[in-house]
Structure formats: C-alpha cells, structure tokens
Length: 556
Image (cartoon, rainbow, N blue to C red; front, side, top):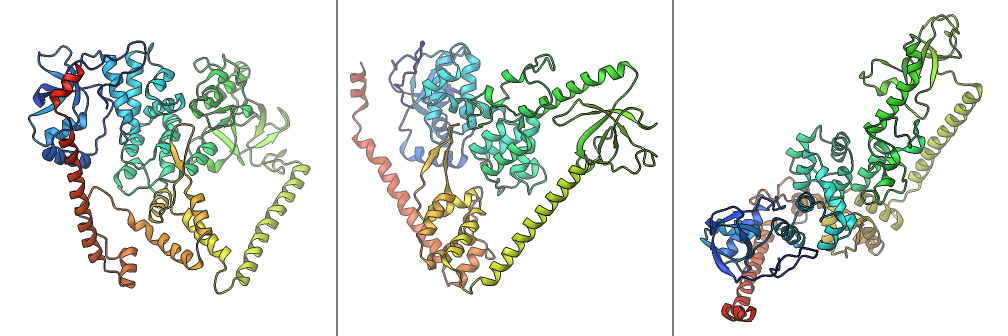
C-alpha cells in the first residue's frame, strides 16, 4: 500500500510525518482488526526467501500500540512482509510509524487489502463488515464503495459472503467454490445453503466428504442458478396468502418490504427479473401454515379436527409427514354427510392452501368405493388422454428421427457433425478444464463484469468461434486434447508429485513416443534460468534509488 494514501471522508487519515526506521520484530504486534485471514503458505515461504537475499524493499505501516508499553507498535499494513521476515529469521524490519485512530487504522487495512490482487473475497468482506460495525453512522455501503473505488452492488455482494455457512466458507477458502458460486449460495437461508452446497457436488454424500477431497470440482454456476430458481425461489403472485398482510405472521411482516423478496433488495438480487420472488422458503411455509390455522379455527371451535391434506403425491414424503394425507390416500366428497365416513379436511399447500373440503378414507365405502380417488371430470379425462397421446407422439417421433439420422451417417463425419461433437464434448468438461484449454490454445479471454462485481468468461462462446475456424484435422486433434486435458490438473499441496504411468496423458505420450522425462528436465532448466533472471532484476532497482538521507531532506 502507498504509505502516503489519504482515505476520503470527513475524518481523513493524517499524512505521513515520520521517516522510515528499523523496528525490532519483537516490538510489533499483529492487529486483531486486520480483515485478512487467509495467507498462502507457499507464497509466504517464497517471500521469506526473497527477503533473506534482498531484504524488505517496501516498509510496513505501524502505529503506537494502544494501551501498550512504550516502544511497542501495532501492525496496520504489511502482515505478509512481517510474517515472512519472521520466517527469514530477521531481527528488525523497515517501518513507518503513524498516529492513527482505530477507525483510521481499520480503513487503511481495508483499502490496502482491496488493492492486493491475491486478497480473498471473504477477507475483503470481513474488512467492510468491521468498518460498519466500528462506525455504523460513518460507514454505510455507499460510503465504503466510494472510499475503495467500487460500486455499491459490489460491496453489498461482498458483505453478503459473510452469511455463508461454515462449511461453504471452508470450501470457498479452499478454491472448491468460485466467488460466483459463493455469492449465489450466500443469498440463501442457512438450511437452503446446505442443500445448495450439496447440489454443487452431487457426487458426494455430505459436506465432510466434499471438504476431504482435494480434487472436488463444483458444477457450473449456471446449473446452480437453475437449481435455485427451480427448488428455492417461490413466486409470491401464486401465494395463497396476501403478501401485503402484516398481521398474518407479525414477526415477518408484509412481504412487500421484506429484504428477502428480490424486488425489495435490488443490490442483492440485481439480475432477478421477477421482483415478486421470495427466497426464504421457511418464512413462506410459516405464512402458509398461519393461514391454514386461521381457516381451521372456526371448525375447531365447533369440536371438529380437520384432516391435513397435501396436493403432492405420497412418494414425495419419504415417510416424514405421517399426519398428512396425500393424493391417492383419500376420496374427495361433494359435501359433508355424503357418506357416514366423511370428515373435514384442509389443504396445507399450493395456491389453494387453507381451503376446507370433505374427504372419505374408507376403502369399501358404499358411496365412494366405485369412484376413483382422483375423481377427474369427463373433461379432465379427455384432456389427459389428449396430453398422453401428444407426449407419446413426441417421444416416438424423436426416436424415429434419431434412428433415421443414424442410418444416414457416413463413415467419416461431415464438418457440421464434427463441430457439433467437439463442442458438445467441450461443454461437458467443466469450468476448470475450459480454462486450461483456453490457456493451452492461447484464446483471447474477453471478460465481462457481472452485476455483483465478478469477472466472467464465456468459454463456450470462445470455443465455438475457435472450432469454426479450425481445419478438419485440427478438430480431430482438439477432441483428443479435450480427452487429455483433465490430466493437467496438478494440486499444489504435493510438490514432489509426478504424472502417473496409467494416466491417459502418460499412455498417449508413450503411444506417440513422446519422451516425458526429457521434457521434465527441459522445463526444470528453463524455469531455473527464469528464476535466476528475476532475482537479478529484483536487485537492480536498489542500486538506482537515491540515498535515504536525501529523501528525508525532501520530505522536510
């Protein structure tokens, strides 16, 4: 961070008034308010090696330790340099000391972390939240956005990440989830977040299994959004209750002002077109249940206890709702007393929840035993037959079309067929392999900014353009590369790992007589030369810097 930076606002951070000095590491305490919690141990070790050879080139920022001993300091900015200096066994570190309030120190920490390219979004979010908690009157979403040079939607999206459940946070820290995945999950309620996390990794039984597997890869963000829209979001226009009613469930109030309704919180749900969407299924169900209780109360006062009936089929219950009747478990009566066995019932779900009607559960009822349980009208029966016929026609037609195509396929695929197969294969590889192929083919990755601040790349669109420009032979090679690209994955926790002999990449290399050991040796030599050159470039600027004494003179 630039030591001369001044944060905007009514109470600006004072400019630097002290010179650079060497402070013993033993006199420095790490700040408890530093929002950054995640540090890459490998990169920290690399920085320590660099410090052993060249020293600390950029001073850290300190302030006198509040309520501490004289001559002790609190670390405001430069935690990585401080920790790396400890690893390098140094006694002191160059630092600038400034008089800062708690709010000024925290603001500088947040701004410094935002400027770092490797800061984790969760750490960034913690910094914003700490500012708001410290001075809620001074720091709001809009004011923080202006101070850090971001949009209010971006800051609001980062703040929402704090709402992630612990297992989702851990998966995010371990790069199993992208920031787009995390943002989609964070907008849900805790129970729905657990379901969404499981949906991201359908091949695993629970969160513990997901976190245990270092190679776990999530489904695409597009698939996650589709699942959320299908399984979580609820359309308030189809609600059986009045969304404007504040008395139905007093603790929740009216849906119109609820922040969990997409239209009431545009910063959090900027891309959702349907503004009357509820994102809290538990609250929605609680309101439906409150409506049901209101409807059954008059009957209960008369001594009747209505049966609870659901519109769903019995197989959806998995045996959990034993006090609820489902389709196929009753026959609907036209009125009370139609037979001696009729009982009052209330519908507990669907658009007609709260409706009171009468049912018969007796299998050998003289009145209802010849009546189908579902009781479709003649018009409904005719419509069902019509729909069933249309479905059979569509399914069988598609099978016949595919059979006809298969008979006409030539021995060698035509270019349109080859492009279709290649792009379909590419789509199934997943986001990480899309990125690896893009780097391998040196495709130009044009990024687009989403409404919540993330940068996305449409790899499928890029691949479609690239395949269209390929020759036939290149498309065949592209298919083979797609089959091998997953073997490029190389986890960073095991520096001594080698390519397995039975991997597709190794077996294909042997088949085409590619000497893998020779390539490994060549890469090692190449990287050693690059590392040596980078160290020489790092030393060079130090000889061209003006003496430190002249800097002091100029600052005075």
